[in-house]
Image (cartoon, rainbow, N blue to C red; front, top):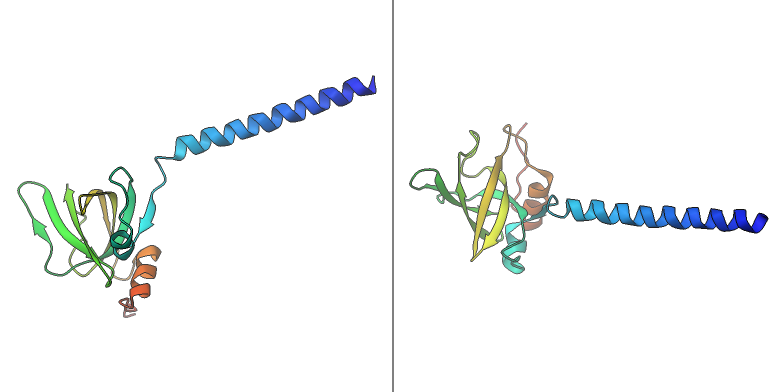
Length: 147
């Protein structure tokens, strides 16, 4: 009798472990497209990602590179002080987007150009995303904001 209870308990534990592994695998599979890693321009130049990889880029909009094309086409370069990456974006830019200001974009790096699907700009005069600040500090370009 005890052997049957022990065997049933082992079966329940085994089924629970298999269910937990299956649930973890399904969650990971479902989130694989929703996770976007951050890269600084220097990292992109050093190790260019594949054209199908979606990631975030951040840095400062390089002065003198902001060009508005026909319609909603915009091009500019993003720099972290160590390297510059050209960016192309079709859409409406945030109101606070301008040269020498921090930005973060989401998209893919195709044929040497970052093709952005989303552009975020700073939301006030002192805010800059932590990843951008870290990348700028690494290159020795970051200046503390005036308080």
